[in-house]
Each structure stands twice: as C-alpha cells, then as structure tokens.
Amino acid sequence: MSFQDPISDCLTRIRNGLMRGKKDVHAPYSKLKHQLVDVLVSEGYLKGCEKVESDGKPAIKITLKYFNEKPVIQDLIRISKPSLRKYSAASDLKQVKNGLGSYIVSTNQGLMTDRDAKSKNIGGEILCEVF
Image 1 (cartoon, rainbow, N blue to C red):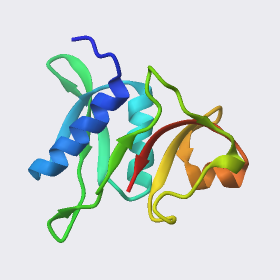
Image 2: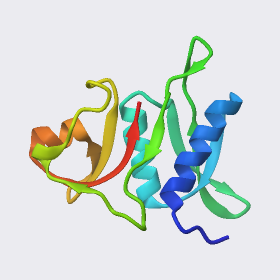
Image 3: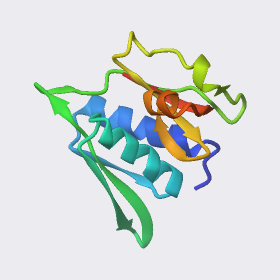
C-alpha cells in the first residue's frame, strides 16, 4: 500500500489508538517515523516503541500512555505537509500552549523538540505539534 504522507499516517494511527483506548498500535517502519516516535517517548507522551516484524515486513510497535484512564496526548497535529512545507528559524519558534506542548522539528542534527532546537540555535522543518 502506498502512502502519500507516511508521517501523517503514523500520527493518525497514534490518535486513533488513543481515542479507542488501545494499549499499543503498529505502523509501517521507517527511520524517520522511528525517530519521531522516539522523541515522543523521550518527552513522556508515549510509553515506548520498538521495531517488530509484522507479516514479514518491519513495523513499529508504539505503546501508548494514559494517565487516570485519559490519554496523555490531547492534540497531535501535522504542521508541515508534502503540499506545504513549514520551516522556521530557531528565533522564530513560538511556544506551544504557553510552553505546555511541543513542536517536533526536523533539523540537520536529527529530530528534536522546539526547546532543544532553540537551545542549540538550530532551525528546521516543523513536522508536528504535540499537546
């Protein structure tokens, strides 16, 4: 199956799993998606992720996180799309929900949150917003 936007597909699988109260979800594997999910895990939005084999093809098993039976992630929005890319310099990165949320930024040093990108003074493509 061919996807036009695999990152958006991965984020949608996470959102749908959280809405249904699933323990974990699977997404087709790619290095970029694995890095994206790793950043979400390190920021505490997800419990964990691992590369697994599903029907002979590599996949990412994403373990979702809940607090008091409610999803930790309230909003997960794709910002930069294949049809309209959004780039930002480090000085132009705004706070998400007064600092409660995060942007995931693709930089030349890998994926990182907006706070990490600002501290390293690196700009890049804003992939998604998490709150």
